[in-house]
Length: 219
Length: 262
Image (cartoon, rainbow over all chains, first blue to last red; front, top):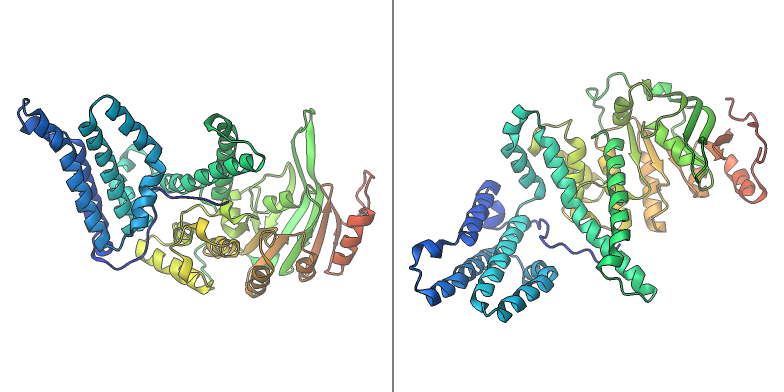
């Protein structure tokens, strides 16, 4: 199967300061960044009548966050192509959002929303490109370890998460395969036409994955 | 690979693989009622290092392999692999029997080869650092060191097959079962795979359509219509080739020709 893209990217081995930074520090930084990005701080800080300032701050904050995250990412050797790969699949949605805000005359707020989402995506990309997934999931498993008291096996949760992440590129590959198969027969496959074969493939994938787990004695 | 006695102390490789009057039936297919037989009365005792299972598509050879590692439960009959009763303790059997699927993408559960091998080692090595090191060493041994951090989707077919094999061999199974292992490989990768297979200390049972591969085995089983129609040495391979064209022994008759009674 061809044409698999990865929105969030996967670990690229390296030896930069971001690669060496402990995973918990990176994760906490990303969480803090998300809080800063998504909490409407200005509203409480600024008086209501300074609407223009408010709007400017609405896109100023995420822009600053975005630039800072990108600058940090570049010191870790993350290339322009990675940023582009992250943003590209979401472009249609971004375009719709931008159009909506332009039509409603809320361009500044639209810019704020878009920059917030892009900054969050880029930050996630930096985390995932500089930290092996296994290390991240070990962290998640440790974080969930108190759940053991409730009879939940954190290792099992971690495994489920990992298999889920492994399935994302598979499903994207299936989608592009189905689209190509349709195109090869001269049909343009829209979302409705795509749905059935993709769902069938997803179920088959789930069954095979279950079988592979059993075969490897990991059930 | 060194012996790890902690895995299953009761595994006894000298016993071999024993199949006794094995039947597998599934609920009726094609809208018919009743049961459809997939395997009927298979009996064999395999002690040879390499056993090839030959058969046409739908002959039941994949089912035969699946039964060996408890992936499929027989409707009746007994299977014993290296001293483990597969029907009674399928979990133990799965630990002792490594299974490699035809399509390695179905088998690789993790995003990268390294993580996949680490997953195999999870029960065995509790310490993440040691687990990682062991996984790296194993991949390095297989010549996949330079690809261990890559997405499994970015690997070539041959590399994926090697990665799947590394994950399965990581827990040092005593029997290795391969379902059409060379079907998706090009000639160079096939040659490399064969070389690798030749060096493995494990007993190996594999199904294949590749007659040259089957001829390299010490024992050959021919499955047709769910029955074991021939059981012998590599000399069977040429006859199998002829049967594919002229028809199989016992074809069209209800009774087994007795070759399975070994």
